[in-house]
Image 1 (spheres, rainbow, N blue to C red):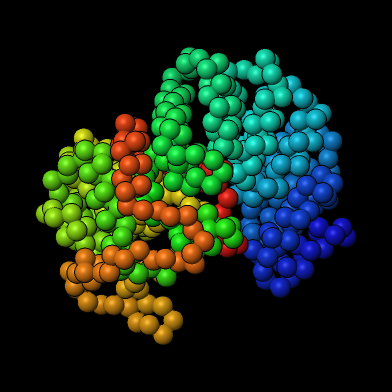
Image 2: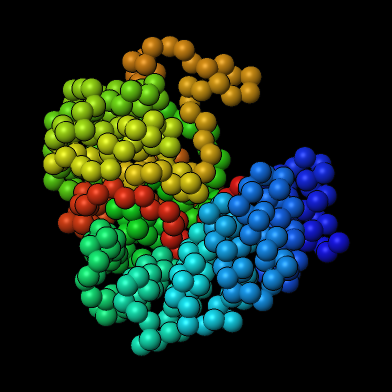
Length: 416
């Protein structure tokens, strides 16, 4: 039994399926294709993924067959273990270097792992032989997500409009991303630590606050685990008010989504902004729609938020940067991985069952003094934020609220 298979079976024997996945990571690009396929088959059998198990079995028997390796890699991507797809797809592409299908699937696997620089290098190596659609489009996308704005812009100049209308939406989305990146570069450094700039460029959202803890220890302005507080919710709403004023936006209401957490924060927003609270209507114009956490919203409701009515602004308090929501908010107060709401049960603390209006009043009346944190985070003063919001306002609130699956080039430590 190989080392990879042994490590996987040991975890599976202990009933630890996530542990078995983790056990494969160190072997994903060092084990032979046959060994990796055998270990993956054991994992797939335990998970009940019959398609992946079949593909892995075939690849284990035929580790030099490009089609078997492609099928194996494709099944890995489809089942959410893209890191296992990279090595077999590289092997297949080495055997058939001119295969556009293999190149596209390998790029997809690298993108899923946020390995954008590798994907961009793979595509750029084709030089003038690289087709426009979708390969050059993917080159622009991965170059931008890797943090190379100039390279992405240069590649985009060579990209014509697509002849296939199915790519028109993607082309428009990419042009908006490049336009926002241009604005962000003029307003800030847009370097490997400019979390606000890259969040705006890639998602279209203004990031209201930066975590004042662990900035230089891998978080770079994000939270990993957050015990949320009324003070933080209030600060996010204050920053929203600054952004609206700086961008010349004058909403006339706050729209309440149906979830309890959304309603609490929405009522607080109405109080902070001095606006009436109304029931959410997708067609309502000149309103601030407030969500506490879009990942917690009903998917059918979330789908109505993808488009935008005139003057509509979507505010999300907690934006998960490791599992982005189906739609990108226009304003994110906080980037975090896990969070506990101030009114949620936690440990020995019972849930706060008070009426929504009372909990919202706690947020409205919360201390507005900024948290100084550990003293290692760069200053993030209100005036600087107001100036930033004004500078990027021409690219704010434009286009559909597309999901942005990549966290971009700014590093961030995460759990798991």
